[in-house]
Length: 249
Image 1: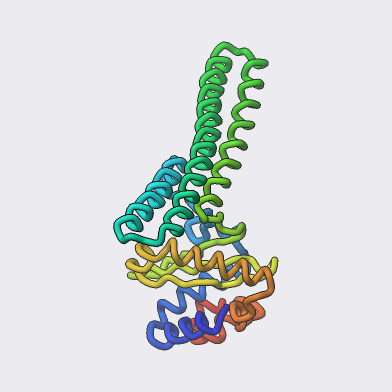
Image 2: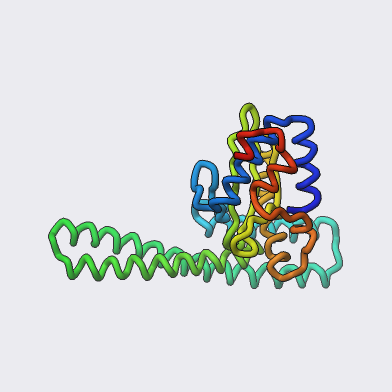
């Protein structure tokens, strides 16, 4: 963990020892078992799309381009800047329509294949069922690939694999700890959200920041993220909840 997270846990241990004990207990279990703890304590984090239909996000982004152009025209911006922005907006519109067409075509073909797969299953036609299942799998791959292209077009790279959230189940509060297994076999604490307001309002931002830290750590560019190390859960408990017999057991 970073020195900042260590300080937070130390302050919590001094001011709210029962809360700290519950968190350390969860961290000890995590150190012993890893993500296999599973829900509700450990939840993998995958970046959700902003909309159930990612093509809508492209339309919203294009509207933002148009709004910027409208603003520049109203403020009598430099003509060269306007021309450049108009060219960028036009190029984005073309890419947007191509991506939307590819996504929509794959989604429609997948839906049709699912319909005929249900028909084939009802008729006991194993050959037709297998063929439609093949089409479904193929179109699902296409949809995933195009969705990734849309995310990159919008500047929203997917979160890196291996991000998890620890939910200690602290009574009368809500604490989330975002972590990764980095290096393999070790738990790296990246961010902490404390309190229901923080969890509700800052969760997405915290995960995005954690993802950026993890990318830097894997590139060897953020030594501070792992400035504080503990050999195991018992050593962690000895520092932050040494008087709590349940935590140390």
